[in-house]
Image (cartoon, rainbow, N blue to C red; front, side, top):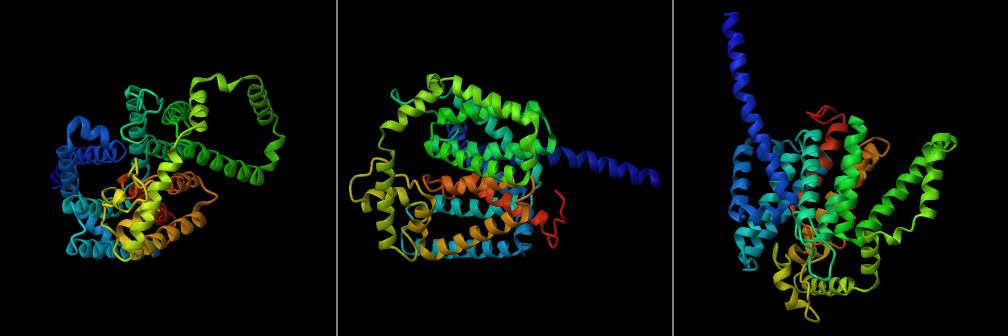
Length: 404
């Protein structure tokens, strides 16, 4: 009897592991498509992306349903409120004929629900390494991509917009610092920094550099306040002195990547194009304050509501986009959910290593003021990660403070 029991357990184990591995590979490919949607569709087609979506949903339907029904924390309740109001408004938009592409909008809604409910309780370290491998691949894609046009040096990874690629890179860098502090691999962090800098300079996003500088300033202040004795450490003083001398002696403006950035900063119409899009969004909000113009319908309505012809009809602001597409009620519930998520997590791990993941999420929130990624799934993925961390650190959570 004992032998039969051991044999059954071993066979069960052998059958379970391949299935688990295949499901992990499916999840990784799904995550890869979050950050490299253009590359994915260009090489495999939109039908392949839809097929992976259906496979992911079918393979993990029970887990997603279980996770959604177990949402008992305060920010989980506010997520439930947000997703409920979004669904009601989506139905009203459909009834009023504001949905020009019902299936595309339904796909967006289901993505929001599925990604957050599934990954909010997915093993943290595993999903962070999925993101790391994905973004390292994105930088490789960027290396082989052509620039946007003959007069521009800017390139992107597997997503179409260099600014969006830069936002992904910021989040990727902060996630990598968290993983480095856990695993202490110098090779890992050195390789990551090289890829990050290459990608960021090729993306050429001014807002990304400003965001990076702001976060590094905050980190420096925090370090000096809580580690003031280390100022007198001779090793740290030596490193700082060498960096200072290098900064004074080396003319960084001779570096091609820096020259490209400085040249772009002089004259371009990016701010003008974005302002035109924002004004179009403002008029959409005034015309449809309750239920918006339709989920995913911003671009289709831009020139209808613009004061002048808009050369770049993208929203360029997730908050204006959400207001214009879904109205004040959905926007209000979303902002309550996000605000509570940020405040609760800030209190929970401001002094811990998870601070770096907090920076990753905040960098996306701030970059969202100039980007229109709104409901793109990598943004939703980081919302789910923030919920996961809070669950791990909350003593009343069913995750019980361990990375399951």
